[in-house]
Image (cartoon, rainbow, N blue to C red; front, side):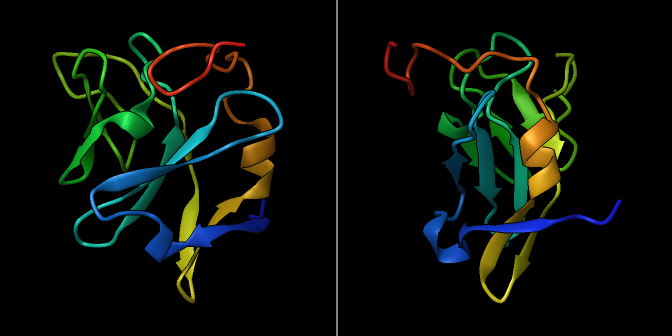
Length: 126
């Protein structure tokens, strides 16, 4: 299926070695990460271990460390790095003319089985 690209933000809006969260109508947010070499990756903003907000983690190389228990997640695959196990859902992402875009179909469907976080270091209690 051909992606249906949706512009999310300018690349400059995402800090180098940082992240930006994308809210969705339902399901957990999506985290868009920018590496030091300006590569961009998008994962479900939920660590496979305890659901921690990956967008609040430390970005290094092409990985992010979860802020809750320091699990390391590969940005290109969403896979936890051994000895940890698990995977954060990955989203197609591209940069076109300085604009970061995600596939609208994936935004509407991927990771909806998880409830959004209601409390925690990056969410307000409902």
